[in-house]
Length: 555
Image (cartoon, rainbow, N blue to C red; front, top):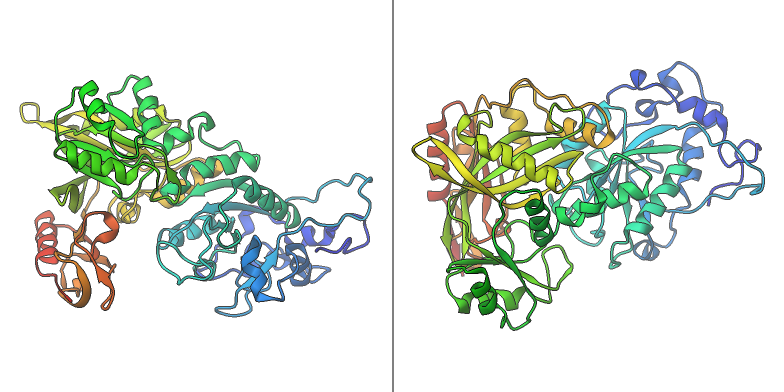
């Protein structure tokens, strides 16, 4: 609990604290990629005056008491910091969990004017590494404190790139991390109440909430609204930005083409035949979960038996996002090639919503799924993709994307007569960064484009800077390296991907001694490899080498 008064003036915060740390954005130094201290966050040293109280002691009180019994940490919502406070560091891997508590006011009947805002802040919802590194750096350039919110606590697990622990997030520069009790279902209302308490106690002002993964898309706008923010996407369409059935309704209502579909609710799949007949579909058809991600629980069904089996697997099961799925979607199979169209949305951009980069997916159909081989970056200004640009921008507006970034997946057919891709149809859209480090590669290949800074600016209501052209000057490809067999991984050969001339980065997803399966969805590949080069043909040759020269032995 916080003390009733620091200077005896009634309210529980000393004015000398605010006077010591409140500085203009212009004098806040941009820190290097390490945990900032008081001076980097705007303490008195920044303006040449000395504080009249010890900042560390004052802010320690404002955060709340620490848990003395470690067993109690997992039972409560807590605020984790690397040091004793968000403003200092006591060690490289010390992690402190603090109580989130309402402060005690000496005289609750005496009105006190609130203290001036000490620090602007931004919330990263469900952050993951490496995107978190870029977002933290972008926020620091704007003098923002970064507060992470981890929806599903990973305190007991190991740190990983996709589901990092609070300590891992603190180590990459995040100032503090909110964690719910272990095993508890995330409650967005409780989270908002705790963040408002933190905001009050630390004299913060939250400017925006950034979703860092697909499962956080709908929560982020609701959390922003509960925090009193106006820079949020259309709340009436929040479900349409996540549920693929409602998504199609919103897009169709905007006059844009969508695939014919039906909701299947029978647990045994008996409604498949009727749905196919009423939609006048021919096989193959697509059966998928309505709130999926990373191509998980998406099935290409060549006959009724396959469709019944897929529907039975999805209905009333736990979906990839951890929620119970009440129905499956049956859709017509759209021919053509698949593309990812990425966008930035802000009232400060010329059209409100603008395409920044396009990626073409190269897939093969195997094991009842469309499996990625590689994805290549294209030029969004090429007239061949003009219909995709217009369509994706319309889809983003239809589902209420007004702030931040969006990732729209569409299918289109190539018209050899006109030399253009035509008749685009939405697969899905998500109000988040694209996966597979596409934003990192876009920043590397498009001069003057900084997608992470643009995302922070858009969610905070700042003007978004865009380059005069989004044409890439280099060829970028994400290569998916599969395992062709299942079992316990005994050894790998060809995993030294840095031998490739256009190698940019790679990530091994499998370890020796652990189970491995034939690749179907994005999480079941053995490795992801990112390639960048001036020569497009050299990049494509390295794609083939990365895939063909990789071998595994299983037992």
